[in-house]
Image (cartoon, rainbow, N blue to C red; front, side, top):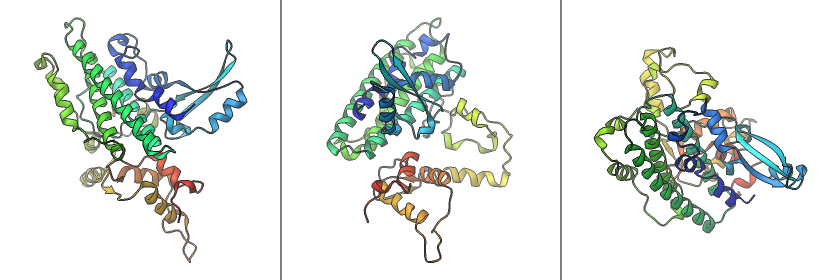
Length: 364
């Protein structure tokens, strides 16, 4: 499948399905999925490759970078093969095996119930996949004109979705109390905030290719708020929970991997994490350093220098730095942003700093 065709199918698919009915909270209230992961799997399970034989489709899959489908790496997805008995065509079907937690500070209202929490995680996962696909587009083999065309088209789609989502939200707000549920209003309100963030992200991320001034996120929120009917009835929507990285660290509890995958946004707070009181302030200050290092060169140039420090040995036979690859990826993706303020993705860091990623690094 052509990467451009694939992006037409996948980008913003979850938000479209919520707005246009399949996962609209008003429609699924009585049978919402038992877990966030099952909801994410259902929405993101797609046929992404087809061929006349199983061997052929397997070979095609090996040539596809899963980043274009919204996955950081192949370990985050399950690929299955099936055969259409009518057409005798073999399909490769991909689905997620984990949820991507929200890696942004988005001011959101307090979720009123578990259903609302489920949808927040659902929206957050889609937003993170949108960023992965955007970075693949930027770092792939596309030429500048092709990148510009795709980015402009996606921005137009996002603006159309924003328009439809606002209408959807206002219709639900106009329902009588008997038919309108607080959680449904919260979910559709939050969906608009995620779409607004997507618009701002696309404008900033593809700024070198798009000849327009990025819109201010707060202005877009103001436009949305100005259209809400009977706004005094929904003042609770404006009581925002703290940003993700400004939580009260003293009250964070230890979570298992299963807990985090089940609901990465809704991390409940308690007093079971053994952090000395003297270190709480230091830890809070550390968390606020996210994105504090800005590079003033291309990402692959910067990461090529990191590769040298990791692999090139000095006269004593030692590398300049010693660190586990997975730890280095976490450090760089947390602290380092590019010239436009966009964090380096796990996938980019991993690809460029691999010994086999010689084509991604600039020539000496």
